Length: 230
Ligand SMILES: [Ca+2]
Ligand SMILES: [Ca+2]
Ligand SMILES: [Ca+2]
Ligand SMILES: [Ca+2]
Image (cartoon, rainbow, N blue to C red):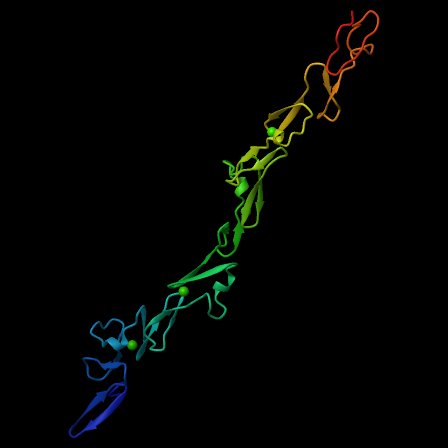
């Protein structure tokens, strides 16, 4: 075999010719592949934006994961996983954000990205040791709220429970004493608090066992106390 590929006859001689992508060796007989990837002097049109793979008689460009080869077969273009085909961006439970070569899932306020980096999960604000609520914390999907026990109301900060001053509504027939979370009614001397814990009732000191043997003869009960009859 005179030439490895094409032989061209010439007057008194011949020469070997190589197909595109090959170059004639020093022996002028054998064609060898051009390593387009190693040839830094190569025309810019054959440059790959990312990886160049040499092939026999040719070459091709390769793209890393998350990129696809553009129409020029040279430039790798980012895949928008959030909108394209069956890419993983569809797995984001909430918001998909495209980034070069990849994508990421994001979550709205109150939710946090789970270990799978795809699904957003509720933050349990109530599990926080330095609890955000002064009294009762109620966790909800994407948020939480504070609650107060009976006798308290939620302050303007939506976090702190403040005592209700029940005495403002005058619930007692006589004296009202406000306390943290509650209140109590008190009665003046000579009165006793009824079972309703609100109203004061006169003690009938004249009835046996109630108070004293106040009078040796007649006793007249009066509101609040009794006078001595001489
Ligand atoms: Ca080649
Ligand atoms: Ca992308
Ligand atoms: Ca929550
Ligand atoms: Ca109170």
